[in-house]
Length: 443
Image (tube, rainbow, N blue to C red; front, side, top):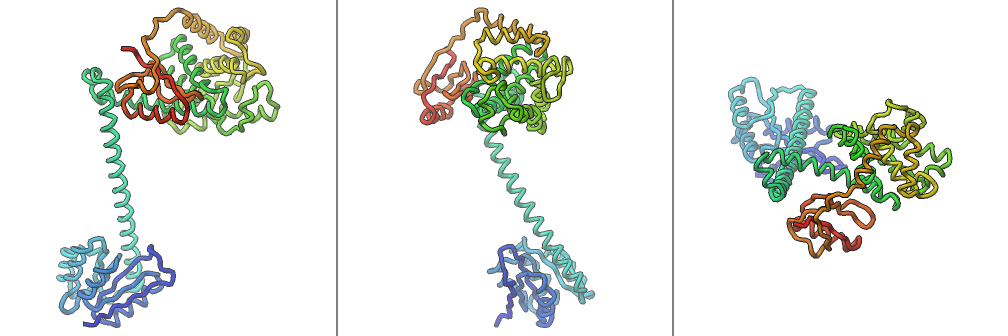
């Protein structure tokens, strides 16, 4: 049988153009449908029988089929049933007369048609029905893509969780037996979150070589002062996070401003620098776990006498955590030479802190600071540890100190247990960043 297939394709055809197939044994109806849908920009095929329509579908991707019900040899219900079986993603619409309700129901049951339209049709209704059907198909396609993406991501998360579970078991078997896996998993995620913040903090310090380790030292001193002042652990954690990230607002500052001591800045330069606490708060406000820390970052350059910035707060208007970070930050900055025109020794820095008591610094924070210094000066029980090079590392060893690069970046946190993967990473890093000394607990 000679096929009467016709194809109409817009001049600017592209893969996004949708394809429709009209199947009817009456040529004049096919011509009428082509005229009606030509302005819509679809890629159009026509077939004069169900068999011919199936041949077209077998070799061409078709988005939507409109078939007449009454056709010889294979009626519309039978044709659409085969389309549903072989190409279920193709949308199916049936043209039917009022007297064919029984066959229409059969088409609905077996062909799973999208809808049926009675003849004679109203042009606008038919065009709108096709547009709605194709829109619905596109939504389903996008939904399937999202479902596939979600499924793939869920699988990746399952694989990641399986890997994490195995690592946790190898490090914390005794604790897992008493507290259960979920509690351990939460604790591990919390440690990972803290480590991520510490790594990001070290990246901020990398903007200038003299700042290497600055945020880590400020955070540790701030944490000790906070505990000395009786803050609870949640408050201490907020202080620690804020101290680690206190300079995040300086990311956008030019390098030359980071290199100049604050005392040497011009008025215009100070105008830029004093904006960084507020910018730091803005950068973290969207992170729920860091919102309290963000408030402390905003106020860590306020002075007890009200002469600080950015808000000119004074006394107890300044959050306690911010008063603590202000002192710890300036104590370290004095020794780095980023606050004054020269570097001070620890004793000189302590003397300046004492002289600012009740003026620049909260008197209670100053007292707690000196109590921490006295406590640190006492002889502490030595940690049993050994210094190794990367070639001596073995699976299961636990870091007794933070692993810091020669440039001051945090690579791994203290108490991290090494596995073969981390040992390989350390060796690879040494090829780029120089030899490391790794401290592990001596069992």
